[in-house]
Length: 450
Ligand code: BES
Ligand code: MN
Ligand code: MN
Image 1 (cartoon, rainbow, N blue to C red):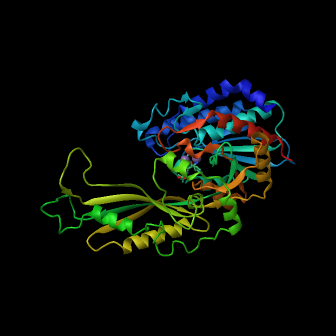
Image 2: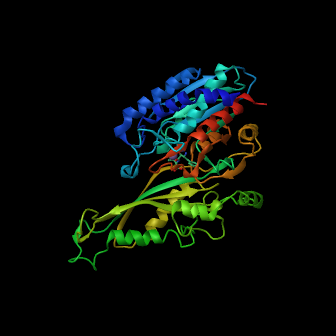
Image 3: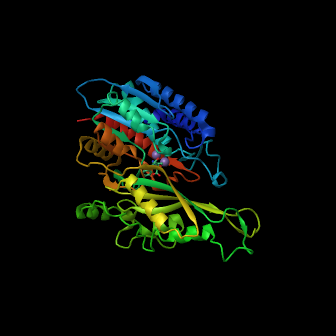
């Protein structure tokens, strides 16, 4: 029955997503402040269209959280839906085949920044709720919070959760902001990595120098920074910061065995990324390396002359942004400290270093024996005719552990994206098949709570 309704509404459901994707709601860039706020208003309107009550913008110190609820029966379980209407910056813009905020539908996919992360995904919930409310088929209470600062670390959400603790009371949280193994192998995400993000500045001489006149006797901060970075991780991918692995909770052999059964095609993986070989810890499979193991990556490195032609210069400063993905029970504040101490320790005397932490996030593991997980599993079985595989993933959604800590509630990560959706990359897209399949699955999820 849901399938038919969705088919009938297909063009409207798609058109509304196109409208949503047109807002350049980039939370990281102050230039887009008004666009982010306009996007919040649009989401509020669409919650009203879905038939939700008490729709409002709840203010935070940053961008507002869009709230709506449908409370039908006090004896029924209450779901709290979380999503985010903000998106990553679109650059490098030149690599997009069509403008990032002018959605294009091509080969069964919709291309736009935010298509899969997270607009296309949270919007499926609004459409499922609309169908269920209209047809009197909603069988749980729902509360909905769509925030505007996820891509900048959700820094105001803990204060928000504490302030609205009563309002946010629920039995479980449901989030569609992750991916599945493939459309043939549906999966439910059961773990997310944490994040520790640092910026470093290495200073050599007090000004840029002629590299002929001074080179050889004055330390070049870019050379030194590269040497220092090479001391953070060895060729096997092992991180060399003392104490880094100390608190890690071992993953049970049972879970590792289950993971090893998840389908993974090494050749297809390499081909998709155009790489000849993968990287990382030999003792762990690729799926393990990107989910249950911590990592360290340089996200950006700059300094000196990068303009046209050649300029012989020995620069005064070098910079890098370095992030670490964390696993349970690594604490990002502790890792920040370990990183800083080590980075200062390995700095040679001929430079000065400054280490600044950016936002971080806690890792999370979600239960597979909860009511919400069973309901999600059942809903996927209905629409995919397959039992979803539980699998941890490598990305981070820091609020999952924050909600557990502040509200005492577990999350089910019911995502419908694919790793190939190019989230955070140029030409981000979402498959229309996944969009409609997701709506259908969520219709079952919210209407068959027993
Ligand atoms: N939706 C992603 C997280 C994600 C993507 C989880 C794919 C699993 C699979 C989220 O919007 C995101 O990008 N998170 C950031 C962290 C945040 C603190 C900026 C990340 O993982 O880099
Ligand atoms: Mn996201
Ligand atoms: Mn993201």
